Length: 350
Figure 1 (tube, rainbow, N blue to C red):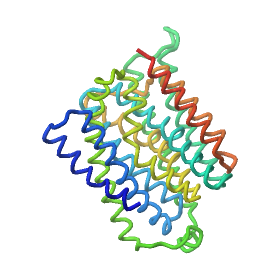
Figure 2 (figure 1 turned 90 degrees about the horizontal axis):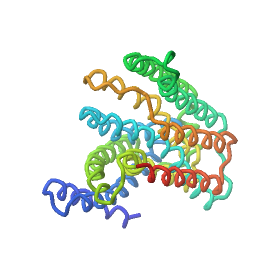
Figure 3 (figure 1 turned 135 degrees about the horizontal axis):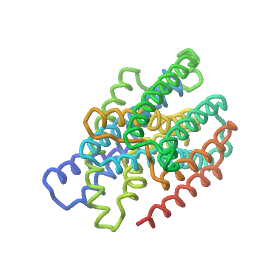
Figure 4 (figure 1 turned 180 degrees about the horizontal axis):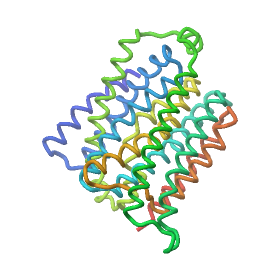
């Protein structure tokens, strides 16, 4: 692990390459992507320590929130520049990536190391239901906008529908947070369940906040280099938005969820993976809709047909594999396989 932390030196190198405009965009992209790995390792260590005090539900929620902070900042900037379609593609890709890649690799790595793993089926059921509700809600504006000519709402009405839905989704996320927090056990019992801690809570929280800030900065550098790098590699804008931006932008959450799954802490891993997808759908997305309205750059919740198919398919298989309270490496491979299939499909979209 100490050799992994040695890669932290790549963070200032990536900043230097970006500021000095040295080496071109591919060099910035590769360097900043590699720098995210040790930063994610630090975030993972801090998350495990905080979870000892707070329990896996709050620990997973805290990690998902901090992990999505970078994406929210990046997408708000893109929205301000009028890149609404790229923002929507990134939203869809983030949800797909969390429920397929993060959950998939967590099940795969944890299953290969520990065999069949178990987690709280009640908590998994709540998360699965909320995820299904969120994705169904996100499909409604697109379905209505594709209705018959006599029944199809106008563009202005679709914008109003999206604005009202944003408030509903935020309200549902607030109720979900309330339910999660009120369902927590006492801190003493969670410490007994999670095991001993090696650092005090203020130190763990400080490490969590510091690593998050560093990841936010490095994410901006990384995402800024993605589009020109992808153009040099011949990738389309849709592929960039759905597959590439979320994959590298959420590398911290990917690493942390897999790391805790390898430590056989599946409740925490599941809360990070599914909780992050929920937060994207129920909080980040409506915040972006309202931010677009405030900035004069309206963003509707009308996703294209390719994004809708990917969202519904990813949600369906994630619900099926997570509600029984058990996971194994084959289920992880199944989730990853679907992500590869979707990636291939998006790659061939002109």
